[in-house]
Length: 363
Image (cartoon, rainbow, N blue to C red; front, side, top):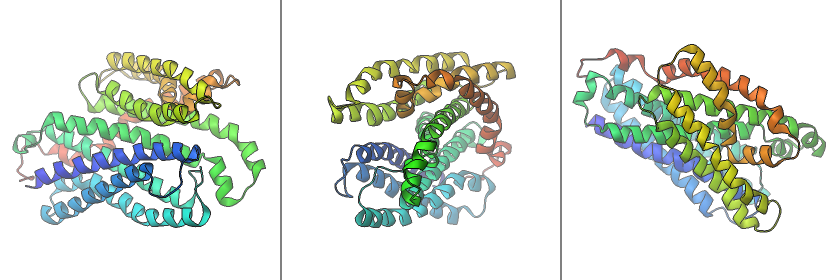
């Protein structure tokens, strides 16, 4: 019974977390293009539908916790739902606050406002929670305990793929949030000079950081999945969300207006950035020598950044040669992320589950 509730909770929560971040990407485009006229637009409907699902999953987590009687493996499996409970709680506050903010101050194109920061913080926590929970479910399936648990391995792998895609998009969104100099200037009334002085620096830092977040998720994926191909699927899913919201949709709305034609012409180049990720997926296994990990992380880091539609467009279509200038910082960020992925994956996994190989703890 409890194992089935776990599967239901993480299925609902994973879908909810993905809808939140996908809706968030669309919401940013709607705000940037000035299409938001009411609070209850399709972008917000998608976003808040994800919040409802996350809250449902968190509620199931409470039910399971009350029924588990303190079993160690159950606590480990509930960690992701516990994180989502905090994230969902933040969003319960953020939703009405966002409605009040827009009612009183209008619809702005900025991420960094009090209500948006609270809402996005919840989105990020939900993505982390679902990644933790699904990785631990997969870990459990590989032990002798799994013979007593009626979970489909293929279904769990699908959930983990969606969760890691969500995690990647969430980490990139965290970068957007903390480096949104226009939003920071808007919220704290810092003026146009602050924006002019910090925009280029913030962009360079952001493009470098998303190369690290992508590389980190790439290596986590390679350590979680024994088979090649999972990373390519994750990259395609992430690219689809980013390309449709940041490139295709904006190009369609802008039409012949600047930068509409540029966005259209960039899409074929953007799609080619999947190819190096596919080659990386084929080359790197889930257990590799340290030198191979270092070499691969440096190679893949720029393409992890280029798969973010917004940064990629501005890097490759800008006339400032920043795409060349940032290669070295991206390489360094990728090396750090690649080497950090081993310890991070071990932390996402559960020691309690790993040592339970022949117990009925989940009955």
